[in-house]
Structures are given as structure tokens and as C-alpha cells.
Amino acid sequence: MKKRLKVLLIFNTPYLTPRGYDFKEEFSDEDNMYTENDVHKALLANGYEVRLLGLFNDIVPLLEECREFQPDVIFNMVEVFANKTHLDKNIGALLELIGIPYTGTHADGLFICNNKALSKKILRFHRIRVARFHAFYRGHKIWRPRTIKLPAIIKPLAEEASRGISQASIVDSDEAFKDRIKFIHENMKLDAIAEEYIVGRELYVTVMGDKRLTVLPPREIKFGQLPEDEPRIATYKAKWDEDYRERWGIKSTFAGKLPDGALANIEDVCKRAYRALNMHSYIRFDIRLTPQGQVSIIEPNANPCLARIDEMAQSAEKHGIAYPQLIRKIVMMALARKF
Ligand SMILES: Nc1ncnc2c1ncn2[C@@H]1O[C@H](COP(=O)(O)OP(=O)(O)O)[C@@H](O)[C@H]1O
Ligand SMILES: [Mg+2]
Image (tube, rainbow, N blue to C red; front, side, top):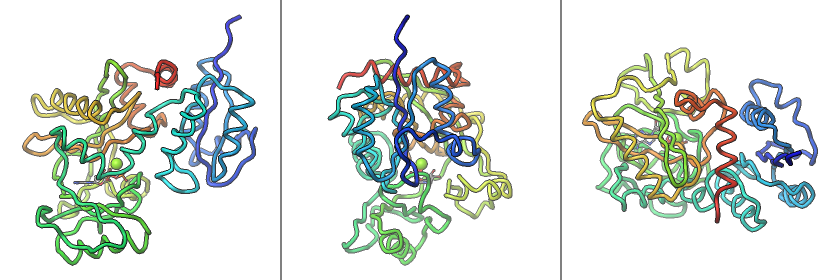
């Protein structure tokens, strides 16, 4: 009989759980760990032997599990460690030391994507359009460089999921500009980035592959009845607060009709960006398509959300890749990769 592939599914948890914990309760709660549940079910549907491991702030269980279970591959869904977003790269780096293949972008890619200034520097070097920006590290002078025109958007330099992004992130005076940076430094205790505000439709574009790249059909966020004078951005509330989304008619859909030539342009820019950043397996770009037809990359998302209902899986399905097949492809790409 053919040996079943051994997959260790790792993800972050908001509390410590022992090895062997079954996550039945968490996975059966639809509002809780639904993404992990989706991936787990899909791995089982592929016939793999799967073990689960939740990580909070202790790395020893991962080392023990690797030694005992000897997985063929690790399905990496760890986005934060000890509540810190930037430590995701350390998990990848550790797995590289252990020598077990793991899914998604490698540690270098996680590092690049996590820092919104670094990824923009690389893209800009390769002449890929990004907003003008300036990084503000804590403990240094705050001012508005003349190269950054108002309105601007002020964000945490290295966060995800729109944490720290609200309507107040859009600033149109020098005073508001400085105040919002101070807010991120002092209240959130994080470094900040100021970017010129890019007007345009917001699209989410997944690119998959290593040698040959596939660009999946773009998704789009529609801002519904959000008043025209309010900035149309994916704030934390616009992304995660179902009541708020319903109140303003904010929807995530497939991209509506695009101007002639726009899709080919988007695909070309996203593929070039993927190569420029040296990404692996899959990433999702947040982009803006300006009224002049320019494609501006807002950010690359390494290891984007894999929930069935989320952008990447929806795009894959429209492209003809059913969910369990998508998860299998991700596993296969990890196994085929050589570091
Ligand atoms: N330079 C920009 N111009 C216009 N909108 C932006 C810009 N940067 C961010 N946004 C808006 O803010 C949202 C969140 O910003 P993003 O950099 O993607 O952060 P996160 O990593 O938290 O998703 C974007 O989806 C977009 O709506
Ligand atoms: Mg984003």
C-alpha cells in the first residue's frame, strides 16, 4: 500500500494548547478558527495523515512534534507568534533549519512582505508602480516630506488585516499627518509608514506558482453606499465588522467590468512584482487600478488567508481549481521546492 503523506498543520492560537490537542471545539465554532478548519478538512479529503499543532508563545512543541511525527511536509498557517506579526518569518526560518519542507512563501519572502517600506523599495527599483512613501520609526523626528502629497494614509509599517487602519488613517493636513503617526508610535507601539493616497478601484489578485505563474481572476471590494466624501478604504471595520459592512453595503465580489486591456496589464504587473520580490508558491496582491488605468501595488500578502470564503480560494475556484485541489497544489509546491 502506498504510504500516506504525513502533514503537520501548524497555526497560531491565542493561548497555549498541548501537543495532541484536537481543536474540535475551536474548529466547530463557525466564527472562530474557520480557516484552519477548512484547510484541515481539505488535507483529510486528500487522504493525508494529518496532525494539528497550535502555537502561541512556545516553540518547543514544534521541535518535539517534528522529531516524533517526522512529517513529510508542514502546512504553515502561522501568522503571528506571541501576538507579534513580524515573527511569522522566524517560524519559516526555523523550519528551514530543521530541514522540513513547508508551504507558502519562504522566510525571506515573509520578511519582505511584512515590511511595507521594504517591499515598496524593491518594487520601485523594478519600476513597478507603488505609492510614494516614507517610513517613520519610533524615537525619530516626525515631519511631512514634501514628496508626499496630501491626502496621505498613515499605517503601521508591519501589520496585517487592517489592524490600525480606520477612516482617521487618511489625513489631509500636516497636523493630522503627524498626529496619526504619533498615535501609531505611542498607542500601538509600532513603527509607521505614510503613503500617498491612491485613488482607484481596489482589487485583490492572487498569483500562484514557482516556475510557471498563474494569475487567478481578480476580486474586488465594493464600497457600496459609503458616502463619497469618506475615503474608500478597507479599514478594519470594513473588513471584519459584518454589521458595518451590511450597513454600508460593502461587498467582496469578483472584479466588475474592467476597462479594455486592464486585465492583461494587471496580470503582467502582478507577475513582474512576484518575480521582483522572489516569491514562492502563492501570494495575493492588494492593488489599486487608477482612473487613468495605472496599476499601483498597495501591498503583497505572503501566505494570504486560505478560508474557503476568502479571496484566494474564491479566485481559485473561478479558475477551475476546487478547494481540496488548491490545498493539494499548495502541498505539492512545498514538496517540489528546493531551498
Ligand atoms: N496608498 C494607499 N492608497 C489608497 N488606499 C490605501 C493605501 N494604502 C492602504 N490603503 C487602503 O488601506 C487598506 C489596508 O492597507 P494595507 O496596506 O493593505 O494593510 P493591511 O496589511 O492591514 O491589509 C487597503 O486595503 C486600502 O483600502
Ligand atoms: Mg492589505
